[in-house]
Picture 1 (cartoon, rainbow, N blue to C red):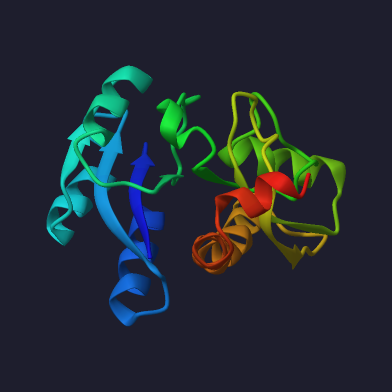
Picture 2 (tube, rainbow, N blue to C red; picture 1 turned 180 degrees about the vertical axis):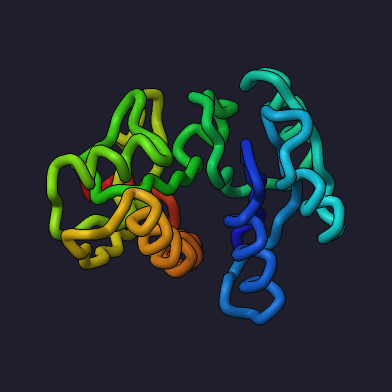
Length: 191
């Protein structure tokens, strides 16, 4: 079972998904702590409601001081909109989800609606999400899971976002379960 620190910046929709799947037994993980770089993030309120320790922290150093107080195997970036530098012992254990099929529409500046607007502007027929390990360069760590969605010509960026988020809810737990069964090194050693 993966003991997770969940880092978020917004509403906590991904935290909701994790919580529900842990309760139903389909996600082999536990949430040990939730940290947000945004003081009034709704995700922190939800974490408290679920009974998870929840903190606001500015920057990687402060975040890492909090994480050090908990038994954590995996740091999960669940809509965390800041470049994060983990503690050395967890350097290869940071899992992120990106709302496109990497290597398309990724890197610095490509997040959230910016990705979906670029997908629409390019006239893509498919989009999707990628769960990958994070390193010091945006969206360049080893890929764990990718899920694809078909797009319609009249889809708006908001339609694309909704379709992609639906598959994110499947992909992220699947990736965490794969990491639990195969181990972190398996993914780093394949590339």
